[in-house]
Amino acid sequence: MRNWYWLGFFPAISLAIPSFASDKDGYSYITVGVENITYKESYSGQGVANSDVSASSPMLNTGGLYHINEKFDFSIDALATFSPISSTETWHGKTGQAYQKNQFEYLKTSTNILLHYKWTPQWRIVAGPSLTYQSYKRYGLEGLNGYENPVFRKGDTWEEKSTDIFIDAGVAYDNGTLFSDNRWKLSGRWIIGVPIWSKTENTKFVDTTFDDLGFRTSLEGTLSYEVIPGLHLGWYVMAGYEKRFESDPEPVSFIDNQGEEKQGLAILPDAETYSFNTGIQALWHF
Image 1 (spheres, rainbow, N blue to C red):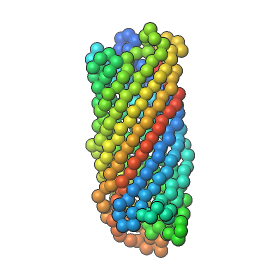
Image 2 (cartoon, helix red, strand yellow):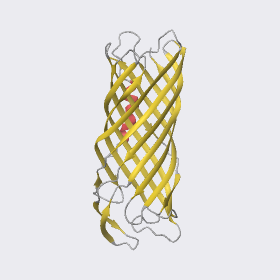
Image 3 (tube, rainbow, N blue to C red):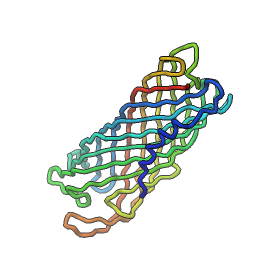
């Protein structure tokens, strides 16, 4: 599968897109902050297994709001995390006893395009596509209480890579300009999205792809203050939730602990991701 790290370059591209406004409508922005996630997996098969891990990484988010006419605007948002901080992921069985732990790293890039219909000058109905790439890297596996994983061996490093195209819709609040009598500016939006195409691969299972279904939602906002005309500094906060339902089984080949090739069935477990992003945001229109 192709790597989608190039999505991280969209922030720079989006900053170069000019506003269609002829006056002071629209703006660009950049956010520097941190993303914190809590990731949970749950497998309903024989033995039952679930995991729970929290991870953090620096986050860069850029984009802008661009004016079309009195009734429509559009926005582009591009997010990338980098230099992830490794965390310990612990797995538990049906009785709740821990049986395995490993190191966990998470990276994400996403590009979101939304068309804004201005119900009022401030309140908007928004909808559009988004492309998201997520990478879950695991290594340093250690069996607990006598457990030995037959598929993922000690010393292995494996990575799960997921690419999804979403259709998002929701509501937003934004007056669309940095120039007003009030030097404070408040903006925000609530979005819910469903994937219309998805593809997930695990480096442990060569030539096998998984399709999955789910949904996601997020609530975000920025409070900023005018430093000079056309330049605001503020604080950005986003809380999100993503649900992935367990996939259908796929035939896979793998090398077991004795070095022998084995055949079997694998699934993508049911997964939940709780995210919280926050950082300093600069907004401008010159």
